[in-house]
Length: 320
Image (cartoon, rainbow, N blue to C red; front, side):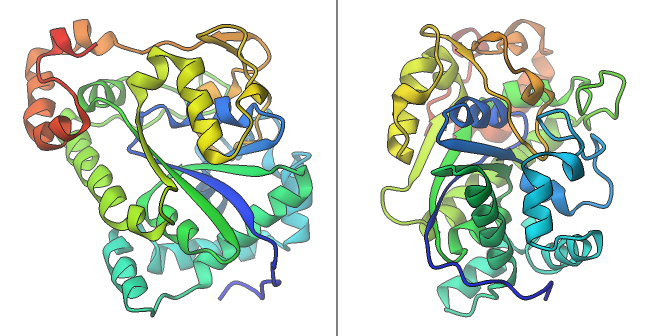
């Protein structure tokens, strides 16, 4: 086990955003994290990586080891490179997405290994203490990390399940986009519509099957990306109130415009660097006119049961 962990008697409130890739989780975290009493830390699981696609660039523009938030947190928790690699191995051995059904069964039997959940609790506590945030927002997305966060000691978890139309997610996954603030940097992986939609089905099913039961009643909320972008101020205000934030803290300058605050995100979509300027939130619906029919229907057929459950229409002309 990677080190001894201090006792943490005070509950830390955490909002964990679970979703499949390209579902708007980074912008969702940054909007909510722009409230003064919240802190969005992005995809925390990248802290354990040996190779970071964006070169360990924080959302604030600094390297994580020099970031005014992360440096004192890492120092306080003695998260040296060796210890981070130990945690990485712990996660790979027991808390990968492929392990989530086994970990869920362990939890149901009262036999869960608490090592990785305790690591997450320690990180959340460190961030809350360093920033004074009343809410820490983790947009890691993965089902395994969501379950570990739900079972973390002294963590009051709210689970936000963000769903995006599988065809839009598939189309986005087919486009080139660079990690980090440097457009010439390492590119995000591209996925075929078949592969992307298969994982869309699996991820959303497991979030409801394994993660939702592990949180307290009333602390799971499912939202659609399209609804968030259709009426941003109203939708995000409702989420903020549900998570215990004052909606008035969100820096909206109009019904669809917001001034995003600087974030200290470990990783996320490159839009995590869009700070300071006024940003207009709108649905990215390019797939409706640009996606090949074959690809759109492939995604539709593969995802049709969950599309019906989530209220998506099968014909692209009616999807918007």
